[in-house]
Image (tube, rainbow, N blue to C red; front, side):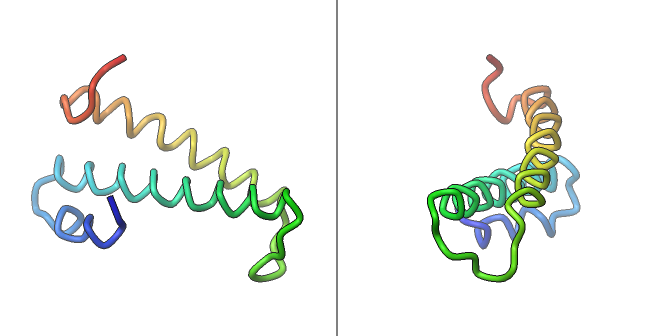
Length: 82
């Protein structure tokens, strides 16, 4: 899924549809952030003056947030429970 594919869900009046969008947007953004952190850790050049420590802390916070979104997604049956 791409971020642009979540727009209709995010604009929905239905809170469950907005939850789906929020989950997918957070998941996609976290994946991109982690890829960027990996690039920097491998010696890649930063796009701006980024601190890997700050980016890693952001990744941790996003991961924790995604965890709770995932619980809610499972409660509604939108993704399979473990």
